[in-house]
Image (cartoon, rainbow, N blue to C red; front, side, top):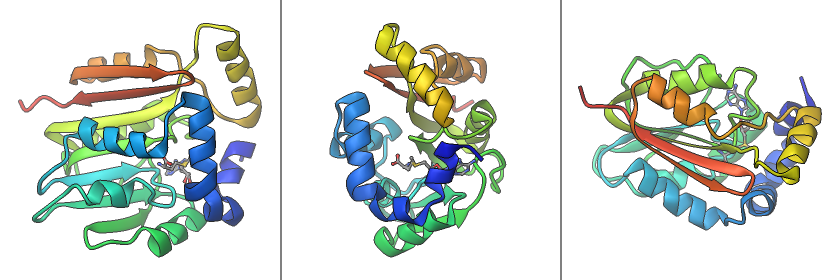
Length: 211
Ligand SMILES: C[S@@+](CC[C@H](N)C(=O)[O-])C[C@H]1O[C@@H](n2cnc3c(N)ncnc32)[C@H](O)[C@@H]1O
């Protein structure tokens, strides 16, 4: 297990992740706050009804509960993560009437095809050993007409981008080019593909066609 994956399994990180680690590191990487990322996630996933939402690599549930609060009726959000310390924090800090958590591997999701109306994965594809397998799993469990949204690393075409690739490689974080996910989404037949780049992070969303 590489350094980045070991860190994600550490109880000490789980304890500070939501309040300190994520806000600081994501702000440094993208110039964006967690509050804006959360608002944009709700918009990108087009939440606002009785949808079924899947939050892959949910960590301590710091997005899962927020997403669930945009739902109504029979809507709910499920967070999946493989780290026990992260899930323990999720249950303690981010429970709610429309939230559930499950331990699992993003590369082999225990859900039938087309189960969810919205599927997201924020800040994790660069940690997962087979990120494209995980991305295809997200698309598999997404229902026709559903929305997908990811936030992941972006290799800027400048010396900082090159440095991020080297540092990322040493710590076990993968740094993706701008085309990787838009191209994969297009290849899988998704439409309305939108990509926004903020410094070292990219935000990509898309729709699975209804037919
Ligand atoms: C940086 S946290 C992201 C938490 C949250 N989504 C966010 O944006 O702040 C990354 C999470 O990915 C999880 N993770 C990494 N590989 C995974 C895999 N193969 N399956 C499920 N979760 C995984 C880690 O356990 C960790 O909780």
